[in-house]
Length: 220
Image 1: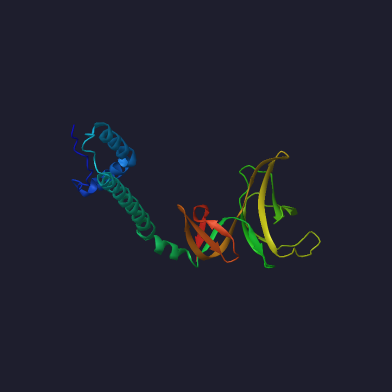
Image 2: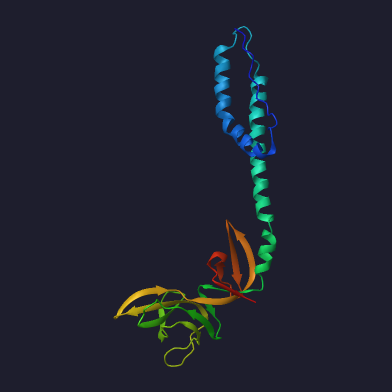
């Protein structure tokens, strides 16, 4: 029995709006379909007139071309998404701004302004400071009404804490029990902005990296 070999072609889609779906449908067929067709042809071919190997290779090449084209289109779309729609301009617009977010801070010896917001109903609030090893180095009372405080980086005896990275936490108490703890927000100047996955990373002047999605205030 003579079986005409099946050849896969790549017809143009009916309209551009369906092109992406059509390409992905072809890619989904891919090599599984090719193997099914190949097996069927081998089972039904005439033993006296076997199909030439070049015909199989041509079919395989056709499937590979479709798959490669879809991958190329996907890569181009990803690049377009990153560069289009003002993404590059958006990155540039962050540089030079002062942004506020909950974060660690590098203490260079200069006072640091901290935006605190104790829990509603708190009867007492404390600012807890830890060094880069996680050791607690300071604990001080703060106003339960919140606001901006200036952290001087001084120990209880007045000695200045060493330079380095510090983390802050505001603990809220009511009836002698802690009801909440939250990292306060601190301003920092953006020196670099970069894409990382689906978010924007901002590098601050002290080297700290924060996510743009964590920013709660911006000023020039």
